[in-house]
Image (tube, rainbow, N blue to C red; front, side, top):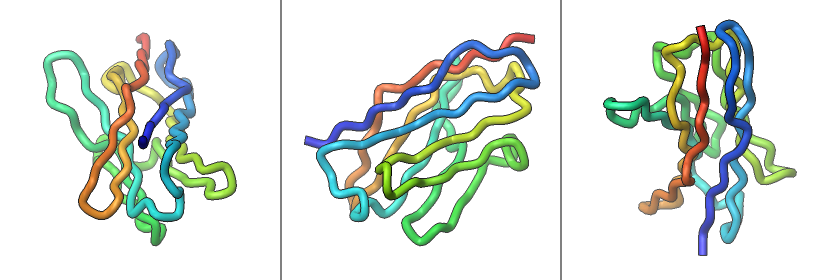
Amino acid sequence: QVQVVESGGGLVQAGGSLTLSCAPSGIIFSSIDAMGWYRQAPGKQRELVAIRTSGGNTNYADSVKGRFTISRDNAKNTVYLQMNSLKPEDTAVYYCSLRVVIYTYWGQGTQVTVSS
C-alpha cells in the first residue's frame, strides 16, 4: 500500500522560510515518474505549486517562482519544497503528490501559515 507522508509545516512570519518534506512508502522510489507539491487555501481550489519529474524537469507556479525550490533526494527517498520569502498569501494546506504511470497518490497535507 502506497503512503505519502508530508512534514515540515508550521507557523512562520512573513519573509521567513520553511522546508516541507515528503517521504512515500510502499513504492520503489525510482519508479515514480513525477512528484509535486500542491496547495489549497480556504475557499480556493487546489493549485499546483511545484513539480519535478524523474528526469529532473521542474515547473513552478508563477506566484512562487524565485522563492520556492523543489528537490529530490533519491538516497533518502524524499522530496523537499524549500520555501523562502514567505508571504501571507502562501498560507494553505500543502499536499505532496506522486505519479506512477497513470496513478496519482496524495498525502494528507501539512498546514503552512504565514503571519503578516
